[in-house]
Picture 1 (spheres, rainbow, N blue to C red):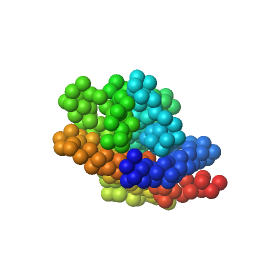
Picture 2: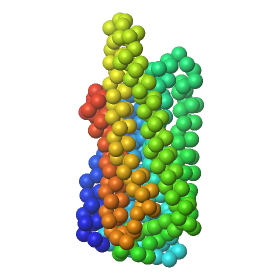
Picture 3: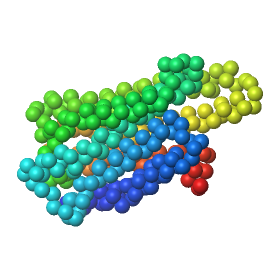
Picture 4: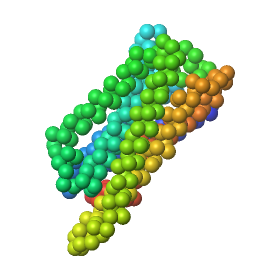
Length: 297
């Protein structure tokens, strides 16, 4: 295996993945043992943490075989291992669940702050579980094409990857990658941009929210802190994910005479995706006093 690719993958496995599991595991633990944090929004953040852990674990599982710890089967057996284990299927399922959850959090905040008297966006226990189920059903269904096209890569030495996508024709491949760009990039970022801009307008630029008793001011400040935290998380998501989504589409329109260049570029964008899945707990710890107290408890 190319030493540069090996070095990048070693960083993924030795540094980013442990940080991801410790940080996101802490999020789950803090919410579980802190009654005051057991709200629907925080439960959505727990779902986000679980999906982010899936991204990290299953994006790097192929390294067990790439580093020679085990031998990857070839042939039909290799195809099935690629479809469900080393082809990163569950990592991409976690990715879709992650952005779905972030968008759901945006809607929850939007209705709680911009339309507080509306029953339409109120998250009851029943609505919460419907959102969670819809999140994971959509994430699984969106990735069904990968189950169908993932096969063992007989040119691993040339490309640096154990698995590849064997599409019937290139137009289907382009369409599916554009769907990823739209459904994981353009559409959710556009929706979150609208939701959070409306929330910012209400919290910072609506005169009625700046008047009232001290308790109302405390509540306003708390909502502003949470909003800033969620905007930061959304912005980091866009910065880390868009390069991966764009290079996946662009790879079909550039000359592949030197596949190593694309392999390096794609692997670097995978590192960004891994960083995104690991960074949210740090944002929580900086922006949320409750989270910091929960970690220390």
